[in-house]
Length: 626
Image (cartoon, rainbow, N blue to C red; front, side):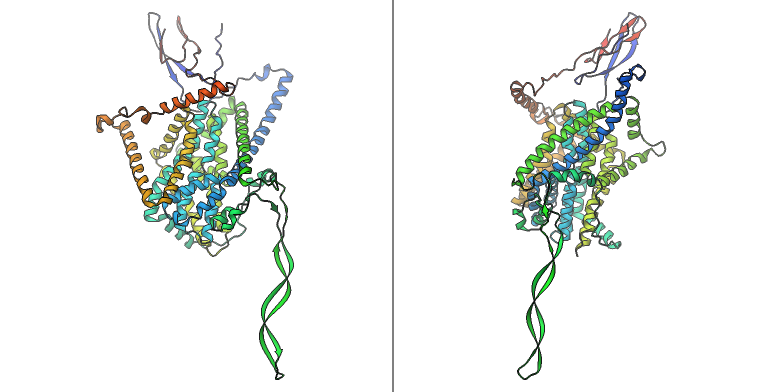
């Protein structure tokens, strides 16, 4: 009888069976090896063969083939729209706070504080394009110098990756998918942090980005173009998003420029389509008038004369037609509603998108896609593959006008195992370059006497990303560093799923908030906290490297961390506490929390027939003697 392989469950560990030797006494030895969770997923086609289908079944399959691409396009469109709505929600909730933070010019002169302000502002408005455009506007208005603005755009680079980190959590149900998706999202973070670690102190000491960008602006005769605005993807998404919410983005810029009156203005747009019109107005001006003097002679004197003239004014326009126009709700209330709705919509679209893609990526199609996306060029040009991926990432980001949208779209594909982490890395590097186009366009359309300074800060953003790529990509072992760090975070998250939320809050809210708060207290408070923290992090990192590479150079006590309490060297004690807290909710809401099965299920795999001996291997064992 033919052996039938049972279906693989989500919590199973599938192991390969490799026969090593046949022992004469009838014993056989097999070795079970666990599959690498970071490897690309092989989606086997389990559907009924075409020649075995009935006519009705063939019609249904053809219809599904036609409808699935349409479903993917619709889900992707709604997914991108939900990202836009989520960004508007964050602007309503934290946009004014972000604008006020950018108005603190004295604090922004501190490089570390400027970096953290850039992170916080970008997280609050959910868009590095918005935050860098506001910074460019402030520089163009003469409210912010170029040098402190450089540190803010460095922070904006880090803050923009919060969106795809949030998106990766939608795949938390399946452990290995979550591992890959979180690693694909955080490889962007790791590169940005590593680039900042090198170039923030270098820029603070030498100002090389400032001088290099100043030379570029001075060497090329770049002209102002007030129409330098490109909208590609927004042309498709605006018709839907404008029906839901419209935002007064100028409120953030006004607050950043020190206009206190903007604090009382609502960010929800109420009047739209305001047009300039001519209106008759009485204007009084001082003019030379010839009059008849007492001696009957003509004399010229200055006199106020009032005349009716046509003046160009802005009309009231018409009431906006979006969902929240005229509702009377506050900005925070509308922001909270939109945030909840957009997150639910985003998760629903992402889960549905993954399911549809998984049903499409079977057999030959999945194999073709995996090979084309992850394959290298033939030798001797294989080394160029990553650089082409960088160009593709930059081009795609320029088309969608948002690095968050691009990276958030491909993050689920990494979780599904269709795109490898090694290929995701250069694509995100390209997205960092592509997103700088928004700042350059904002500078070109600034139309002020500070045009050169505005363009200089936009070019600084581009140069910072290019310099980061030159350090962390061309050399193989440097290239592997962000990938290894991202894999470490992915493995930790797969083991302790709450770690994803902890990481998100710590890196994008708590740490920047603490540093920003200490900056208010004074530079000595910031130094008293920051210097010991940096020394401890550096020492722990160095010891970890030596423990792995050359433990003999360390004292015996430092060759491992066993001398520390378990809570300082492992997340297990914290996980135990969180598990106990969740167990209370599991008892209260058993339909929400499924029971956890910590051990992999055991199932037979295909037997290995070796002569007179048939070996049936079971999962959960490293070696089996039969």
